[in-house]
Structures are given as C-alpha cells and as structure tokens.
Length: 473
Image (cartoon, rainbow, N blue to C red; front, side):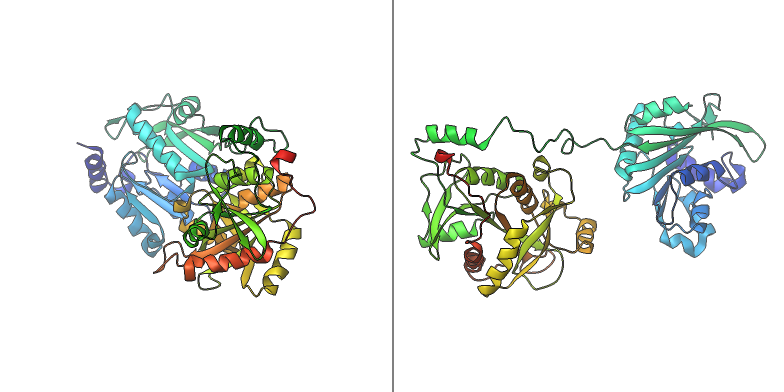
C-alpha cells in the first residue's frame, strides 16, 4: 500500500481520538511558534497538519495566512468541516510532502510527526528541497519527531528517531538550532511517547555581491589598462570621445544616425566591445554607443568614455511603466534609482537607492522646461532580470513611489558618485511590461527625434571638474 492509500484508510476508518497523535491543544507547538514572533500577519504552513487542531488555534488568534498540507484528503476534509466558513480563507494542499507541490514563501514551517516517517535519504532530500523553496529567509522551522528513546513504529509504519543534534545535521548548516524541548506525549489511551521538538532559524548566508566590498580600494584591472592595449592593437593615433556622450541601450538613435547618414563611426574609440558614432546636435558634438544593455555593460562603457574625455554622459533607456501616471510613451528624468542590480555595490556602500547628482538635476529641470520638452521627474527601479518582474515586486515598487523600471540607472549613478562624474539618466517609458496591446511604441521615428531633443536640452550641463582625454591624463 502506498503512503496515500495508507493514510486515507487511517482517516476514513478511525475517529479523531482513535489515533495516537491526537492533541486537544498543541501546546508545545504554540509555545515555539509564539517564540518565533507570532503576529496576525505571520504566515504559517502546517506540514502533515491533517486534522490537527493547530490550525483552529491559529485562526482563533486572528491569523489568515495559513496553509495546511497533508497527503490525506480525508484528514483535510475533517479540519475544513470543523472550521466551517473560516476554512475558505486558508490554503489546503493535498499532497505528499516529498511530491510536487508549491506554496508562496512562508514565515513558519511547522511539522509535528511527518519528518520521522521519511526513512530514506531520497525522501529527506525532497523534504529539504520543499523546505528551502517555501521558507522565507530568517524564517522559523519547527520539527517534532520521536526522540531517540521513542517508538520504532507508528501507525504500522517504521520511523526514524532523532535527537536535536541529529535533526540539525539532517536539515543542514542553513538552519541554526535555536532551542529544543523534550516532550512526553500521552496518547488518548494513556501510552507515553517521547518526542523531541526543535526550533530552527533559517540562516541567510551573506551574498557575495555584498561581502568583501571596499569601494575606495583601487582596482587591479582598470579602463586605462584596456584602452592602452586597444590603442596599440588597433593602431590608433589617439583615444578621444566628444565631451558629451550618450548611451542608447535600445540602439534606435544609432540605427537612425546610420540610416540617415548623420552619424560617422569614430576612429578614436578603442573599446573592444562596441562602436561609437559621432554627430552634431545644435552645434554640440555628441558621441553615442548603442545597445549597451544592462548595468554592467553601461558602466563598462561609462568608465572608458570618461577616461577618453567625456564630461557629461546621458543615458536614455526604454523602460516599463510602474506608476500609471500617463499614457506611454513619455520620458522620466531619473532622480534616484532602486539598486536591484549588482554593479552599483562595487562602487558604493549598501543603500537602497543610488542618487542623481543634485547639481545636474537642478540644471536639467529648467533646461528641459525652457526647451518645451515635457519630462516627468522621479525614481526608477533598476533590475538585472527584466523577466523576473513579479506582480509582488511591481506592487512593492509602486508603493514606494517608483515611476519606471529599467536596467542601468542605479549602476550609472553609483559609478558617477564614486568617480565624481556627470551622469544623467532618462527612462523612456514605452511599455507596461506586456500588459497592454501595442507595447513598446515610441512614436515617430521610434522616438528618436524626441530623444534628441532631450539630449540637446541637457547637453550644456557640466560639473566643475573636467575629464582629461586619455593621452593627456
């Protein structure tokens, strides 16, 4: 008989008080859940909860973010009938804990007397997989099993017995043992069963992106090193870019310049990865690189541009709409960017946002208004993973007052602050992340004419210091 058939038979043929694990009040479980910091907002999953009365107690305390998982549908049905209308707000999962199931991240994983039935390494590995998938960082795990002197079987099935130490070894280093409680459970017919309850905290390992960073330390590898070799290998007479440069991640402006013959490929740009085009805009010589998408690529270009004589870098990137404040397309002057990418942490200490330079912002707003260009101002969200913009992440960004999501601004602003360089980022909001018809429409000439107007309006902005061309530095 497979496990599901076994447990369905148990719950269909035996009453609540006819099974050894019945408890009127799950006192030790509640004590440990309370120690974890129980609030009405706490999300708890009761693994193997069946018709346990733990869920009744938690509902009575005002919790509604509750899930009960059990292999037996009959057991779950008992609990649902007992709760009546209150059961509808809860999540009920009929599945073996080692099988395929999913649940949103939870604060507490509670398991009274399931883990000790997993007598093979393969089953325990699948249990740990679901535990890691389901429990939040710094969440609580409560596991109760038969103690080392407990029964060797339960409900006719073999079990494994544990001490707090052997339980900790099974769960692994990711879970830190906080407390353990020996408990003598008395069955409805008076038999004593020694249990051990153990509470663990999920330890959050320090992410490499945040560890060992010193933004003030010099780098072994530098843009000068790269450009020196590029100049030699490409037989360039000099390395130079115009004082105003543009990053065009979508490549629309560069393609338009090539198509119309208004841009010429630079013969003094030594970058191994890209071509730089030059063109005149209202009497100002501009250098532009297309299709440098994402934070690492954008900063790779910025480092080299400023070494070669750039004084102002403007980034105009296609962006997704977060706050529904206008109908796309429109421009947002990014005043600060949420650092949900990796590159910025190599340039600045940990912080939630990277800030635009206030001097440049003070100049940009009036310059844009004087040119009659409608541009909104506000925060953006910089991500490394556009196809992981989940509903929860989007909602969180909107609550934080963020206007758009893009892939470069936070890194460019962190770089700019670290290096003392002039960088301005614009989010060209062109889409609602695939949630509407006719997305990514930028308007006439793919928005190039409007983008050039934006660039022209701010091209005269500078910081006090100037970047020397490579050959003079």
